Length: 260
Image (cartoon, rainbow, N blue to C red):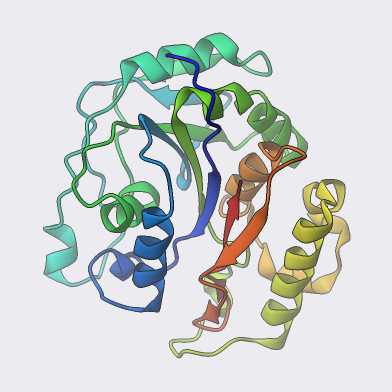
């Protein structure tokens, strides 16, 4: 891919409820607003909480990725939602060349899960930007994912918008069906905000040492790991801003971050 002088920003998006893909609400509106402030990307690389692979890291390498409706019990219009973005075998091949931390395998079976399309259908509704997904190797720890993310920095100057899609606080077992927040969720969300602003990535990587609020906020780490990829891409001159700064359903942080 062509190297550009302009460096693309990087985003972490708290994606939350799949209904955000079709509902007009404060979260979907914040995603739309955030996208309007971005340069038009040549391609999008998304690291979604909803694609975990065993013993390997994979990248979608097909021309036409399918949509994956990886949820159940939602209204029919959500299952009828279409996001016909093309893939980018070129970006997949480029990523495989630059990554040394892991052997990245081409994948032709996955597609776009809702961690990707539910966000992108609001940010880029025309589906006119090619999209590639990178999987999370569930056998590897937080530091592995952070270091792999660092290897992707060159893509920012090739017109690639890199998005991590997950939630900083994500505990479905404690979720409450109301627009409220538990004290421990608020505490950890604010703690992460301050660590991000201070550039203390080491503490964010070692989240298991951050106390009981972290334990409750990250019972499993698949929604947390995409944040590490985004932080790993931060450079010294990058600004940091937040959008969709709210916890809902008791234990789901919708906090989203723009770097650069």
